[in-house]
Amino acid sequence: MSANLPVLLVVVPLLCAPLAALTRRPRPAWGVAMLAAGWAFVVSILLLSRVLAQGTISYHIGDWAPPWGIEYRIDEVNAFVVLIVSGIAAVVTPYARRSVEREIDATRIPLFYTAYVLCMAGLLGISVTGDVFNVFVFLEISSLSAYALIAQGPDRRALTASYQYLIMGSIGATFIVIGIGLMYVMTGTLNMADLAQRLPMVDANRTIPVAFAFLAVGISLKLALFPLHLWLPNAYTYAPSAVTAFIASTATKVAVYMLLRFFFTIFGAAFAFDVMHLDRVLMPLAIIAIVTMSLSAIYQVNVKRLLAYSSIAQIGYMILGISLASVTGLTAGILHLFNHALMKGGLFLAVGAVMYRTGSVRLRAMEGLGREMPWTMAAFVLAGLSLIGVPLTVGFVSKWYLVLAGLEKGWWPVAAVVLVGSLLAAIYIWKVVEVAYFRERSREEPVREAPLALLLPMWILVLANYYFGMHADLTVGVAHRAAQVLMGVAQ
Amino acid sequence: MRILGYYNYWVVIFLMMVGFYTLISRGNLVKKLVGLTVFQTSVFILYISMGKIEGGTAPIIMQGQHVVYSNPIPHVLILTGIVVGIATTAVGLSLVVRIKEAYGTIEEDEIHVQDDVL
Image (tube, rainbow over all chains, first blue to last red):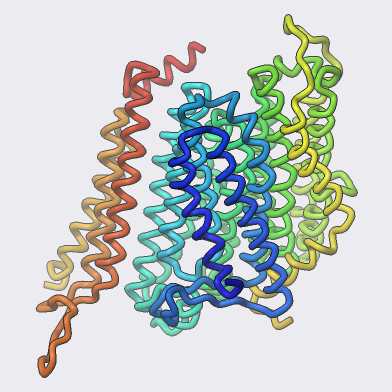
């Protein structure tokens, strides 16, 4: 049993998906989803502690030895990513019960949880597999179910948002398959570790750089790197609240993990940065994303869309860290994967609670909410402080490492960009605070505080922002080791 | 001769561009999906081409006979790829059906006009 944990991590949620559909009633379907999320969370903690104690785990599916069989390979990097995905799922799923009952038709709820569990299984699958074609299959499992989930949103624009995401996501996935195919044709292998050994032996020709380019564009589409982010704002805005919180904290993170895996483990940092100069593309785009998307966020009147633009800017921070191509830079990038999941998860859950009570997430609907929903808005403010990067929060920790990484290379403009981004974040978070606390209510009816079932998950994430902000050594330690593994530095 | 010898790859590039162009240029949501499908199909042919060798047959090794066979792995991979493609098309078309119900049109610009009024 315990030796089979890597595969059971994915298989149990995959089996739970049809089970949720078969229950045909909302509550049991939610129970099945909860089971899958709880299982994944427990297993991911076990896997991470085992990786930290004993090093990389290699699991051979069906006992077929790699590179012929499919290998699941778990090291510090993906053990951490798996923990992010399953941790967020374990917090968002309890929240989803009430929120989904309000936003989605009861007859469709079992199928909703089917798609939800499938999406989770796909994201976990991408994270643990050591086979590049397997990555594509899991990517499509998670993406297709995400399209279905987004389309369930109460507004009809959810449908067009989902369609737009489907088109752009499929282009991205197809680009990734082309890249994988070109790598296969040159090396004859699909196993990541095997590819990493064989790619440097391929004679210099154009096929490998072309594969590299296709993968870079495809993965950038999936992780919503500026200017390939066009699908993201609508998808986050119109999806059901629980889906937005889940996808915003996991899907783009897993795509960033794919970027790390393909360019650091498979191609190798030397090829990606010294030969292909990936940093010359990533860094300007990351900086533009941080500045322009934060500016766009300021002008939004829909709070979910405001946070969506802020997400694109935050992805910019991760990519900025990665593009520095140093251990400290990577540490900052990987750290921000985790930290951003905590802060954006908390923020979107708070906005979801506003949606639950007022039926709207526009700024106007939040007037005077600071007095009517004190716990929800307090959670929003505290998570917002973390987003800005105030000391004692996780946001501060990741920005600190990002600035360190920039200064380590002597690039002070990087530090300046981080500072500007934080100031802009302060402006757009303040906009919401001002409306909620300093304006009188224009709505007719007063609203009550959100139910405990929504408050509890929200506050778990918010408090985690401060716990991991004050005990940063836990996450920094793992992120640092993961960065060393990716850079191939001996520990 | 060398250029003609790669004719299946030329077909791949042609289909890929036709599909991609349709996807970008058309405003009709169904036509966009048709473009997407052609685009994905071109990749299937790319994979199948690289597994095929001249005179190659099915990879069944018979005793005492020297069998020249095509690499089956790309073909198997594309079997999965086809399933994924069908699933994508199905999800996409069902979204188009729902969009038609909600907006009464499947033309992108008309949908934008309706949403701007809101």
